[in-house]
Image 1: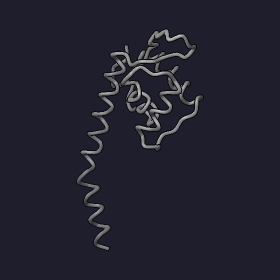
Image 2 (image 1 turned 45 degrees about the horizontal axis):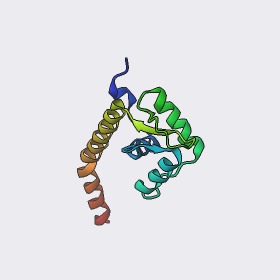
Image 3 (image 1 turned 30 degrees about the vertical axis):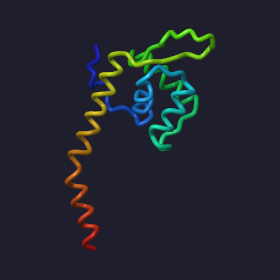
Length: 114
């Protein structure tokens, strides 16, 4: 069985998809929310989105929310595994930034010396 660390690192698009699924959403709403929460840095078309959603479903990171609102849209939600993966990726990214912080400040200081 896969360890949770085996799912990492996440791509930028996948990370934002999982963040978007902090609440139940259908595909188009995920695309809109990803663009909003990434401040326009990440935009994705239907092919990219649905390819990622299919993979995430197979990995049991997300699942069909089984919401019957009378339309044909499929709604998705995070599984408990998905929540763990998202939290672990967040901690991994935090660690990357923290570990590099002093080095980046040094580099910025070097730039000011020129």
